[in-house]
Image 1: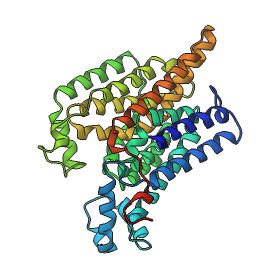
Image 2 (image 1 turned 45 degrees about the vertical axis):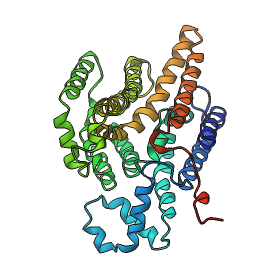
Image 3 (image 1 turned 90 degrees about the vertical axis):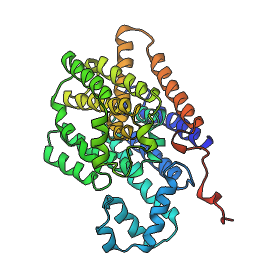
Image 4 (image 1 turned 135 degrees about the vertical axis):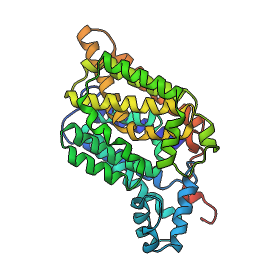
Amino acid sequence: MAVYSILFLTALGAGIPMCGLSERRDGKAPCIYCIIMAVLFTAAASLRYGVGYDYNLYAGWFYDLNFTDFDELRGDRREIGIFLLLKLVNIFSADYAAAFPLISLLIYPPLMLYIFRNSDNPWMSMAAFLGMGLFFNSLNFMRQFIAAVICAFGLQYGVKGSYMRAVLTVLAASAFHRSALFLLPCIFLVSIDWNKLTLTVTAGLSIGAYAFSEPLIRGVTRYVYSNYGIGSREMTNGLPIRYAVMFGVLFLAAYALKDRMTGDKRSINMIIWCCYGAFFFELIGSRYAIISRMSLLFFIPGVCLGAPKILMALYSSAIKRKKNLGAAVMAAVILMMGNFLFLAEKNYNGVMPYRTIFEREGNP
C-alpha cells in the first residue's frame, strides 16, 4: 500500500505547484512533472513481482519464448506486436523479469506524452488515472492497455480531421490487441454533437444492449476473447455494479458540463463519447465480466482528458458565481484518492501486496 500511496501523494504534491491549481501553467514545469510521473510509473510497474492477476501469465509467455523462434511467431494466432518485441528482449535475457520493463516503457512514457500534449492540467489527469483505477488496470491487461494508449493518439488525429492517420494508428494498435479494431467507427463520432436526442438514443441503446446482451457477448468472444468459453467464470459472472456507476457519474458530469468546458467542439465530443463508451461496456460487464475489458479502450481520453475538463469547468463556474466551488474540486480529488486506496485495499485486479523483483526467491 505504501508504494501506491506515495504515487498518489507525489502526483498531487508535485503536480499542484508545478502545473497550477486550476489553469495549466506555461513553461517547462508541466513537462518536468510528466517526466517525473513517467519515471515513477515505469519503475513501479517494472520492478514489481507477482503484482496483478496477469503477471504470471505474461511471465509464462516470456519463458515460452526461450523455445520459440521468429518463424514460429509468424504462425502464432496471438497479436504479433508485443510478442515480437518480447522476443527481441529474450535474445539478451531469458529471465521473465526482463519483460516488464519493456511493457512499462510501452505504456507510461507514451501515456504521459499524451497527457502533456492534450490535458488541460496534468496533475488532474494523474489524480483521475490513479483514483479511477486505471493504473491498476495497466498492471494487468497489458497488451490491451498498450493498444489503448496508441488508440488515444489515433482518436486525437480524428479530432483534428486526419482520418487516414487515425485509422492507420488504430490498425497499428491492433497489432498489440485486436480489440482496438472496435474503435475504428469511433474515430468518426467526433462529428456527432451531444444533445438531448443523442442522450436519449444512447440511453435506449444502453438499456437494449443490457437486456439483450447475449448476442453482444457472443460477437466479442468470437473475434477478440475467443479463448473464453461460454461457461467460463468471466462469461457467467459479472463485475460489481459500482464500476458502471463510477463511469456513469463521469459521463453524466461530462454531459452536464459540456457547454462550460474549454476547447474545440470536436475534442469535447470525443471525450464525452469515450466517457459513454467506458460506462457502456462497464454496464454490460456487470453481467459478463469479460465485456468490461472493452472499456479499457475508452478510459484514457475519457478519464485523463475528461476529468480535468470537468474539474476546470467546476472551478471556472465557481469564480463566475463567486462561490467556493474550488472546495468542491478538492473534495472530488480527495474522493478519487479515497477510491484509489479503497481499490488497493480490496485487492483490485490482484495488486496487493506490492512486492519487488528483489523479493523473489533466490535473490540475496
